[in-house]
Amino acid sequence: MTTSPEADPTVDAVIIGAGFAGMYALRRFRDELGLDVRVFERASDVGGTWFWNRYPGARCDVESMYYSYSFSEELEQEWDWTERYATQPEILAYANHVADRFALRETITFDTSVDSAEFDESENTWVVRTDTGETVRARFLISAVGCLSSSRVPDIAGSADFTGELLHTGRWPHDGADLAGKRVAVIGTGSSGVQAIPEIARTAGHLTVFQRTPHFVIPAGNRPLAPAHVANIKSDYQTLREECRHSYGGTIVELPIGSALEFDESARRAEMDRRWSVGGTDVMATFTDTSVNLDANTILADYAREQILAYVDEPELAAHLTPRDYPIGAKRICLGTDYYTTFNRENVTLVDVRDTPITRLTQAGIVAGEQEYEFDVIVFATGYDAMTGAVLAIDIKGVGGESLRDAWAAGPRTLLGLSTAGFPNLFFITGPGSPSVLVNVIVSIEQHVDWIHDLIAHVARNDIARVEAQPQAQDDWVDHVNERSKRSFLTKVANWYQGANVPGKPRVFMPYVGGMGPYRQSCDEVAAAGYAGFTLTPALQSAPA
Image (tube, rainbow, N blue to C red; front, side, top):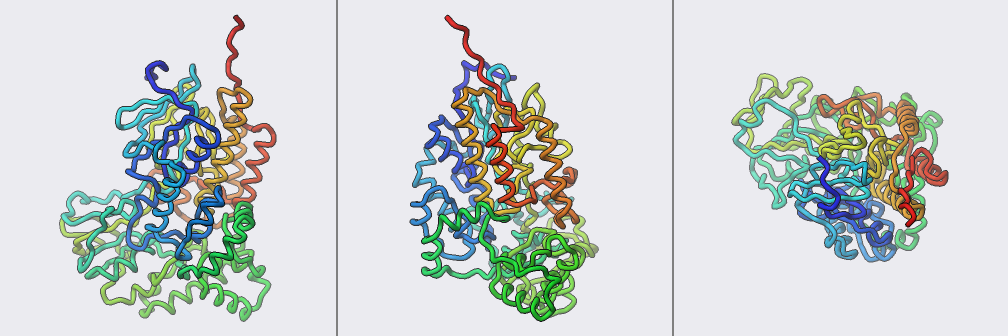
């Protein structure tokens, strides 16, 4: 039940989350627009996903020189990244540096979750309630909860029976976990598993990896950053940043050499060899057509499969580690270091759960097929309820008391990934229907926050009380997102982009596959047309005296 406006403190905006999205939104809304802002963060400090994901080997898969804010030239110049792909501790240190430099913590309430938010139509404000019992009214509600922040542990029979230690990569103990000499299981071989497995294998007495689906793992080619390389980028940072903003993936990649079908085998292999030796995402950009043409895709996929056979000593083991039933790039590409060679170690065993499914946990360990494996520690590298899990964990009610959970029961529906019909003055940063997880998320965050910032400024100038997505415009955008996704191999197989890792979750392809540059253009066109597709309701004018 909505409380009386007089009973609750009122602010201009409530931001949920103090990761990179929430911090940047706070910086722009508070310091540049002069808004009265409250930020609620369930963790005890800033950093978002990098606060929680402290598992061994955790690092970013976007190059660190571009996985960083571009809004402050001074910040760009004063911060020095040490590696091509930064580790979790370094990224978290960067987040803390930003929070300190711009005095962000004073506006953030930590160790506090938002439980519910209800739109009060009579006042055009959001009534926000927290798990600490606080109630705040806000004109604008900004969701900065993150796309990969709702960690998921599969429902396995007997989980409560296991007497050892259960861990999740997304909720790693902040004081670390002692795995030295222990019998460790890792369940899951997605990005987190690929990073954690080599590191855990170095200290565990024995590591058993339970794999359902083998992934294509591209060598990261991680290395310390040479000072001359850093200086060269910093000398032209603004130009490079602008290129990132309008690129497909929000970062700098080497251009493709052309269609894979235009070159002979010798030329193709020479270029694939070169890019593979350098490592990183440039491998996936070798040719122009591997994401749309199956014959071209097979050329790159077969090359990657050859590399796996070369890395793994036992052919039968290599066969289990080799993806065979989907195109390369149809699931999230993993960047790894020493991943495949780790399975050559005597203290590492692979269990293929397609052949021997996990049926239950016991006091001692895991039963897969007819065999029980005993462990001291079980690590779930099983990912997240991506893109919608964290926001739908909050009880959000819009116009007429409609629940966002009900509005999205068949899958999320948004206009530009920024707003959803029936929920005025509510905005999502990197929401479903935007590029978000398919691109450099920092570029996506900055674009979203900048767009919302400009809209709020427009609202203030024009005395607008209420902004909401129009149902038809939302339907048109959802249709556009779906149409673009049909052209991509990403929709041809089960993956977490479609919620396939969460039982009962609607199978809807959630991110926008059209790329950062085209998406930015769409958002700019909407703004230039006076925020076409949004209903902007003026504030009621008071009667003359």
